[in-house]
Image 1 (tube, one colour):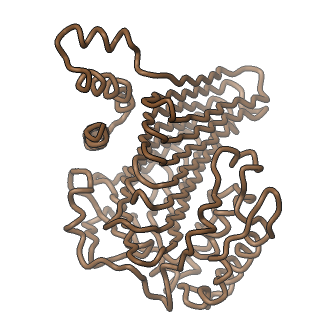
Image 2 (cartoon, rainbow, N blue to C red):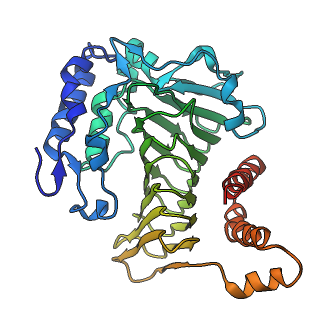
Image 3 (cartoon, rainbow, N blue to C red):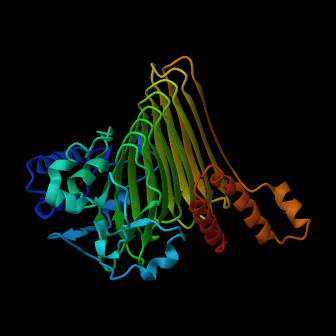
Length: 444
């Protein structure tokens, strides 16, 4: 139902035709969940800039793209035959358990899952929904608290596949899990809605590496939702690189619940997509829980990149640290909305947030909105945001030592972004970050 705060999405009207082909549709609770979620989306509609959380990001282009569903009669559209041609787009990495998804659908023939420790489940969601949906009932929606999120509702209604990762109590996975999501649209604009479930049981450990890439140009919309549950004493390191087609839309939501002494460390690097939004909502729901969010973004042309986060300190002695830094050129636009909420019983909480943006053009734009919402009286919290150009004095210093202007500018930009890697535990991710920045700067 369209209003000043919402707008309709013509693509979603095809839900009735799509629904019958989705895996697990014969299971009553799943069918009811999808139907309720679609009704919720129809009620909410796509948010407009009149909604506070979407004030700086306009989704109106989604209504004009003429999207077709990526799944028709249970089959995927826009397929690829091999992953090899994409190898130059993927970051070099150590051996990993690799799951490949093409337009949101799991491709076991392109995946490489090695021997896993006992107590670990790593699988495609679509296969599990089709064969054992009842076992997923306790997991699906476990970490979700954003009941008013229209795109979450649409994802739940139309989810056809994704990743299931469940790590048993006390289990550590030595090799990282690499999830490769490939957009492969050609003449038809496609939309897909992956759903990922990650559960780290008590005292378990895992590293998850996410790549979002395109096999070619073309218009497509990826609307992934990832649920992460970090139980007491568990640790998840979650690294994501978004390198979608420059004609693509990428609207992602990650919901995280962290138990006592649990740790969730996230790093998100955005350099692709025409319009992208990475929303992370984390609840520190146990004493001593820790959440660290780090992000980098690079945008030029008319790219629009939105990072929106919310960290809730729900229990005492919890810690959060959040640092997002980006570089914008030409008419690139970025949005940072970061909120830290400290509930009244969360005494001794410690939360810090920082957003810094470097503008290389007078046409580039950053909208930044850091927020603190504190209901406890014994906490340490801070937030800050800066935006500006390259320092002329630093540029002059390098030029005076015989470094040409282009090289000097690149050195200063690399230094500005370089400290994003300081807190990263993975050398592979640090190298991938450096490579992304170097490749992007090469076009300046």
